[in-house]
Amino acid sequence: MPTVQTTYLGDLRTEAVHLQSGTRILTDAPTDNTGKGEAFSPTDLTATSLGSCIITTMGIVARREGIELTNGELSITKVMSKDAPRRIVRIEIDIMMPPSEAHTEAFRAKMEHTAHTCPVALSLHPDLEQVIRFDWKE
Image (tube, rainbow, N blue to C red):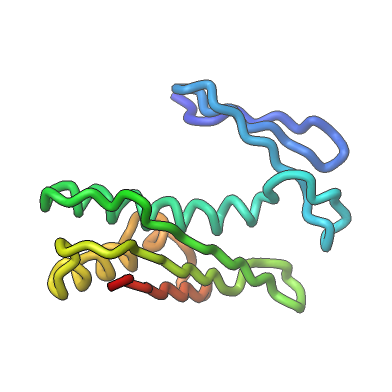
C-alpha cells in the first residue's frame, strides 16, 4: 500500500498527502532553480528528513533509558553543488540540547552514535557529507 500520494499542481509546486494521517506538505522549486521558494523544496525536505530522523531516533533511544529529550533543537543547513549535476553535497545539523543531569558522558556518547546511525542517515548516498555537531548545554 502506498505511503504518500503526490500531485503536481503546476507552476513547479506539488502537494504530498501522507495517506495514513492525511497530513499535507507543499513543495515549491527554490528561487535558485527557477521557482518561487514559497514552500519547502524537495531538497529542503531531504535535509529536514535527516534532522527529524536524528532527533526522533535519539528520542526513542533516550526514552528506553527513561529520559525525555524535551526542548532539544536542531538547526539544519543544506548545501547544494555549484556544478552539474545539481544535488545536495552537504547537510549540516547543529543539535542544541538543554541542560540535564541525565545527560551523562555515556548518555551523550550513545546519543551521538544514534544521530549518525538513524535510518535516514544510513539511507543517504555516502558522497553526501553529513556534518552533525552537538551543543550539550551545561
